[in-house]
Image 1: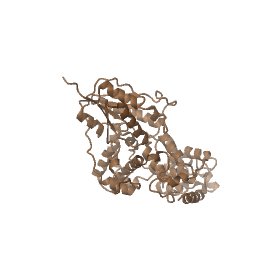
Image 2: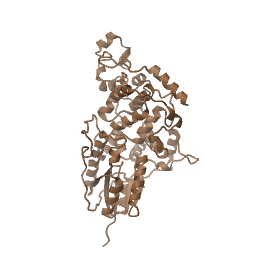
Image 3: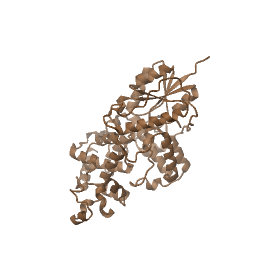
Image 4: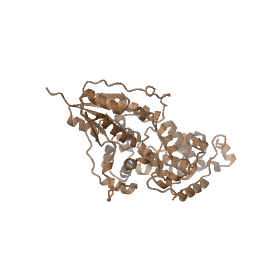
Length: 468
């Protein structure tokens, strides 16, 4: 009797069973499948180590294990170098193929090459889609080059054929192998317990799919008009997309099926995620350097005190402080707020965007290298779509436009709770008597602004002009 063939499905940023192309391909070709996840210390404790993100990852792995158990399998968990662990599991079950969803970061691509080399002629690494909506390597300009600007990329992206959404498997047969256990952050070498984050979305695929249904029913229709309001809930899909608890293709398909202007706006936001992955794929140097060579000569400030004030939410600019406190408290920040604080750090404080990028990656549970790097460089004027002069955001005007009633600021900066909305964006303009009356004396209850925005805006523009 023939021995049933076995494949390994190596999960990475695709922690789900619905619309999982590598899993579907493996189940279509083999009788048995080993679902594998490798906890790589180089990634966990590397350049962008994050206790928040690791704790969320571990919870998502527990949820994935539950989905696999419901279908007769288990999640096999290993800790170590993927080169050895993937090869070891493949050899233990006699697998000739290892299926995985391809990724774009320099780390991911180097890792996959190393694993393929380690497998040698014993097994083949089969990389397929699943992390992005489109096949990013297939999108090219007419001359064969890569796009550098979002709008023409998006038009080409929209014309790309889409793969079919894969069904959820009803059953997964698995060979005998020690599954291992899902560790705690302490087991992985993190010194402190994971903080209790506010508003932390429930992890895992089932929670992600419930969130999708809730967003489609109650949020997608007015997404276009509400998405920039700081006190309003957004789709909150970013952490699910980062860990692959939901497929970006499923989100795109739901947006198309819903129809309407707001749904199309949401679809174009999904295109931004693909675009930043695309830039990382074609320009891996942006992971550490400015996309625009001219900007590599920018002289950044080394004002450690100003940087600390930004990180701790005590700049004296209410919307900036609210956003930074939200980040530390929640491991998440509204996208409009991300732009505001990035502009403030790079153009009001003149601090290197890489420091902001790293602080975000330390705290964000949705910290995605491509999107985070792309967003920081976009605002800093060092990346694609350069508009370095027009992206000097005035924090007071941004607050007035996107938090007009002050709900967002007052939640995260309770020192300002008694200040009326008309005064909230510029508390430094209040006379002393008003400050006393509203219970917010600057320098005592809330900081004086650490810079003059008008002066720093002019300085930033002059510095950018000198480089261009």
